[in-house]
Image 1: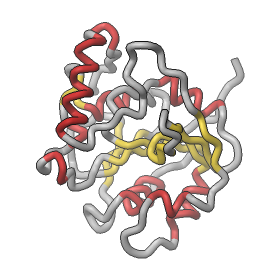
Image 2: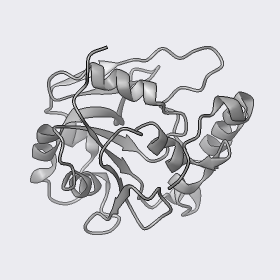
Image 3: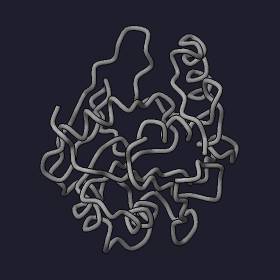
Image 4: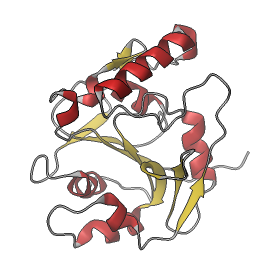
Amino acid sequence: MSELPPYAAVVLAGGRAARMGGQAKPQLDVGGRPILEAVLAAVPDAAPRIVVGPPQPVPADVVVVREAPPRGGPVAAMRAGLAHVPTEVVALLAGDLPFITAGLVRALRERLTGDGVLVVDDTGRDQLLLGVWRTTALRAAVADVDGPTSVRRVLAPLAVRRLHPEVESGQPPPWTDCDTPADLARARAAAARLGPRRVPRRPQG
């Protein structure tokens, strides 16, 4: 198996979470652990691992930074996280993906061509915060953005490869997120069906 280039990971773990009653989505429990812990467990070999958002519990080796202004949106969060990335490759991930896996992240890294590669879901929709990118391309894309701007608009000019991962029967898709209380309930039900042995854990600290 060929050696892949080193990479960092930027996890966007802020936002207002208005549809969740203001609760911090990354710290909600799915499968017996906070969602953010699951996301970080999918990038155990990234260095550094950077969480962008308010202060929150993370392993000792994870860097937590805040976007400027606070709650300034995902593009501002991307810019804040990328400022701490020393590697040429970076995984850009949402902080509310309880079923992302290290295997998927590796598959993305293996398929990196052009500016980046991201996951496409069953509806054909790009999962913009579930991908691996050239750090210089992302930095250039967010460098001159002024004011609130959508991630889709910022990434649109980049040369992007797309991966539609196979999902085994009975497994929740890795793009499952938790934007609403109904999403969270479905994710918790899926985790319960998997059982504790099927939801891998990574110890804190």
